[in-house]
Image 1 (cartoon, helix red, strand yellow):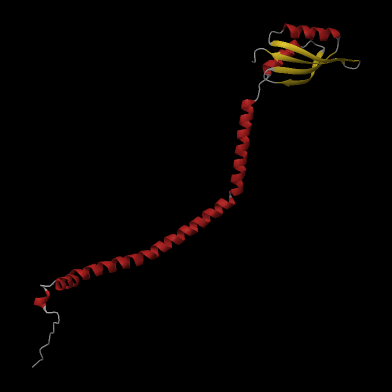
Image 2 (cartoon, helix red, strand yellow; image 1 turned 60 degrees about the horizontal axis):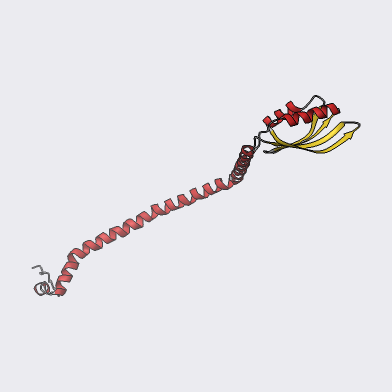
Length: 181
Protein backbone atom coordinates (compact mmCIF):
# COMPACT_ATOMS: atom_id res chain seq x y z
CA UNK A 1 0.00 0.00 0.00
CA UNK A 2 1.36 3.32 -0.98
CA UNK A 3 2.14 5.73 1.73
CA UNK A 4 -0.14 8.63 2.10
CA UNK A 5 1.67 11.95 1.88
CA UNK A 6 1.76 13.87 5.00
CA UNK A 7 0.83 17.53 4.84
CA UNK A 8 1.78 19.80 7.70
CA UNK A 9 0.35 23.28 7.80
CA UNK A 10 2.06 25.31 10.46
CA UNK A 11 -0.01 28.40 9.85
CA UNK A 12 -3.37 26.89 10.42
CA UNK A 13 -5.87 27.87 7.78
CA UNK A 14 -8.88 28.60 9.89
CA UNK A 15 -7.22 30.61 12.58
CA UNK A 16 -5.06 32.56 10.12
CA UNK A 17 -7.94 34.01 8.08
CA UNK A 18 -9.43 35.75 11.09
CA UNK A 19 -6.39 37.62 12.34
CA UNK A 20 -4.76 40.81 10.94
CA UNK A 21 -1.50 39.00 10.50
CA UNK A 22 -3.22 36.28 8.60
CA UNK A 23 -4.90 38.70 6.24
CA UNK A 24 -1.58 40.45 5.46
CA UNK A 25 0.10 37.10 4.81
CA UNK A 26 -2.80 35.99 2.62
CA UNK A 27 -2.69 39.22 0.62
CA UNK A 28 1.10 38.97 0.27
CA UNK A 29 0.87 35.38 -0.94
CA UNK A 30 -1.82 36.12 -3.56
CA UNK A 31 -1.32 39.70 -4.78
CA UNK A 32 2.29 40.12 -3.67
CA UNK A 33 3.55 37.61 -6.16
CA UNK A 34 1.84 39.58 -8.99
CA UNK A 35 3.53 42.72 -7.74
CA UNK A 36 6.88 40.90 -7.64
CA UNK A 37 6.38 39.57 -11.18
CA UNK A 38 5.46 43.06 -12.42
CA UNK A 39 8.52 44.54 -10.71
CA UNK A 40 10.76 41.91 -12.26
CA UNK A 41 9.32 42.67 -15.69
CA UNK A 42 10.01 46.40 -15.21
CA UNK A 43 13.58 45.65 -14.07
CA UNK A 44 14.16 43.35 -17.05
CA UNK A 45 12.78 45.99 -19.45
CA UNK A 46 15.01 48.64 -17.89
CA UNK A 47 18.01 46.31 -18.19
CA UNK A 48 17.26 45.50 -21.83
CA UNK A 49 16.53 49.14 -22.75
CA UNK A 50 19.86 50.10 -21.19
CA UNK A 51 21.65 48.46 -24.12
CA UNK A 52 19.73 50.43 -26.74
CA UNK A 53 20.10 53.65 -24.76
CA UNK A 54 23.86 53.09 -24.42
CA UNK A 55 24.12 52.55 -28.18
CA UNK A 56 22.15 55.72 -28.89
CA UNK A 57 24.35 57.65 -26.45
CA UNK A 58 27.48 56.38 -28.19
CA UNK A 59 26.04 57.30 -31.60
CA UNK A 60 25.14 60.79 -30.37
CA UNK A 61 28.64 61.33 -28.94
CA UNK A 62 30.18 60.27 -32.26
CA UNK A 63 27.84 62.56 -34.18
CA UNK A 64 28.69 65.48 -31.88
CA UNK A 65 32.42 64.90 -32.29
CA UNK A 66 32.02 64.76 -36.09
CA UNK A 67 30.05 68.00 -36.13
CA UNK A 68 32.60 69.67 -33.84
CA UNK A 69 35.34 68.65 -36.25
CA UNK A 70 33.39 70.16 -39.14
CA UNK A 71 32.82 73.38 -37.18
CA UNK A 72 36.48 73.63 -36.25
CA UNK A 73 37.49 73.04 -39.87
CA UNK A 74 35.19 75.85 -41.01
CA UNK A 75 36.04 78.27 -38.19
CA UNK A 76 38.49 80.29 -40.28
CA UNK A 77 36.00 80.50 -43.15
CA UNK A 78 33.29 81.71 -40.78
CA UNK A 79 35.68 84.26 -39.27
CA UNK A 80 36.52 85.52 -42.78
CA UNK A 81 32.84 85.76 -43.70
CA UNK A 82 32.07 87.70 -40.53
CA UNK A 83 34.99 90.03 -41.22
CA UNK A 84 33.75 90.63 -44.77
CA UNK A 85 30.23 91.28 -43.45
CA UNK A 86 31.61 93.83 -40.98
CA UNK A 87 33.51 95.52 -43.81
CA UNK A 88 30.36 95.58 -45.95
CA UNK A 89 28.40 97.18 -43.11
CA UNK A 90 31.09 99.85 -42.73
CA UNK A 91 31.14 100.45 -46.49
CA UNK A 92 27.35 100.80 -46.58
CA UNK A 93 27.45 103.26 -43.67
CA UNK A 94 30.21 105.24 -45.34
CA UNK A 95 28.46 105.41 -48.69
CA UNK A 96 25.16 106.32 -47.05
CA UNK A 97 26.81 109.19 -45.16
CA UNK A 98 28.99 110.27 -48.07
CA UNK A 99 28.31 113.62 -49.61
CA UNK A 100 27.35 113.82 -53.23
CA UNK A 101 28.98 117.14 -54.18
CA UNK A 102 28.12 116.87 -57.86
CA UNK A 103 25.86 119.94 -57.81
CA UNK A 104 28.52 121.95 -56.00
CA UNK A 105 31.17 120.88 -58.50
CA UNK A 106 28.92 121.73 -61.45
CA UNK A 107 28.28 125.15 -59.96
CA UNK A 108 31.98 125.78 -59.46
CA UNK A 109 32.69 124.67 -63.03
CA UNK A 110 30.15 127.13 -64.43
CA UNK A 111 31.73 129.98 -62.45
CA UNK A 112 35.30 129.32 -63.63
CA UNK A 113 36.54 131.44 -66.56
CA UNK A 114 38.70 129.80 -69.22
CA UNK A 115 42.07 130.80 -67.71
CA UNK A 116 41.23 129.88 -64.08
CA UNK A 117 41.68 126.33 -62.83
CA UNK A 118 41.29 124.65 -59.45
CA UNK A 119 44.40 123.34 -57.70
CA UNK A 120 42.80 121.81 -54.59
CA UNK A 121 39.20 121.47 -53.53
CA UNK A 122 37.59 120.57 -50.20
CA UNK A 123 33.82 120.07 -50.16
CA UNK A 124 31.82 119.92 -46.92
CA UNK A 125 28.05 120.06 -46.49
CA UNK A 126 28.10 123.84 -45.90
CA UNK A 127 31.12 125.17 -47.77
CA UNK A 128 33.64 124.88 -50.57
CA UNK A 129 37.28 125.53 -49.77
CA UNK A 130 39.25 126.06 -52.96
CA UNK A 131 42.82 126.80 -53.90
CA UNK A 132 42.86 128.11 -57.50
CA UNK A 133 45.20 129.66 -60.03
CA UNK A 134 44.21 132.39 -62.47
CA UNK A 135 46.38 132.92 -65.53
CA UNK A 136 45.50 136.63 -65.91
CA UNK A 137 44.13 139.42 -63.78
CA UNK A 138 41.13 139.59 -66.09
CA UNK A 139 40.34 135.90 -65.40
CA UNK A 140 40.80 136.50 -61.67
CA UNK A 141 38.46 139.53 -61.66
CA UNK A 142 35.90 137.66 -63.81
CA UNK A 143 35.93 134.74 -61.38
CA UNK A 144 35.42 137.07 -58.40
CA UNK A 145 32.50 138.73 -60.18
CA UNK A 146 30.99 135.31 -60.94
CA UNK A 147 31.35 134.29 -57.27
CA UNK A 148 29.68 137.50 -56.12
CA UNK A 149 26.80 137.03 -58.54
CA UNK A 150 26.14 133.40 -57.59
CA UNK A 151 23.06 133.19 -55.40
CA UNK A 152 24.01 129.72 -54.11
CA UNK A 153 26.66 131.26 -51.84
CA UNK A 154 25.69 133.16 -48.71
CA UNK A 155 29.19 134.63 -48.42
CA UNK A 156 32.63 134.23 -49.96
CA UNK A 157 35.90 134.75 -48.08
CA UNK A 158 39.04 135.32 -50.14
CA UNK A 159 42.21 134.13 -48.40
CA UNK A 160 45.82 134.18 -49.58
CA UNK A 161 46.45 135.97 -52.88
CA UNK A 162 49.91 135.72 -54.46
CA UNK A 163 51.22 136.61 -57.83
CA UNK A 164 53.63 134.14 -59.35
CA UNK A 165 55.49 134.92 -62.54
CA UNK A 166 55.39 131.27 -63.60
CA UNK A 167 51.77 130.36 -62.88
CA UNK A 168 49.82 133.59 -62.50
CA UNK A 169 47.64 134.59 -59.56
CA UNK A 170 47.39 131.92 -56.86
CA UNK A 171 44.52 132.42 -54.42
CA UNK A 172 42.38 130.61 -51.89
CA UNK A 173 38.77 131.19 -51.05
CA UNK A 174 35.97 129.68 -48.99
CA UNK A 175 32.41 129.88 -50.29
CA UNK A 176 29.61 129.18 -47.83
CA UNK A 177 26.61 127.52 -49.42
CA UNK A 178 23.28 129.13 -48.65
CA UNK A 179 21.01 126.28 -49.73
CA UNK A 180 22.71 123.62 -47.58
CA UNK A 181 21.94 124.86 -44.07
